[in-house]
Length: 132
Image (cartoon, rainbow, N blue to C red; front, side, top):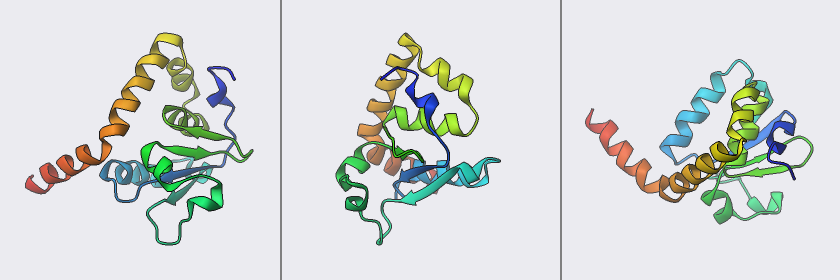
């Protein structure tokens, strides 16, 4: 596996997102209006009809990190999911830069930091939004 593997993601990809997460909802809203939205299928893992077992994975794993499945059956998880998503949306140069050694390390660490705190940060953010 090369560090540039995410550039090989093939559209359409399926983005599994948490419909209860305010940050995810903002991203999904943006994606639904994107000029290449046909390259991304959106699946809300909080939907009552969603079953992680259908994808040979676990709900808790999907809640912990972003998951993207490309049309070749390859999974991209965590920051690599974001890279694969943005690669198929046409931001390949930015993805390539994000794969460089130092940048990759910093972005992966930042993603892990955010992912572990996403729920609490989302609650805090929603409270601030409701006051505004």
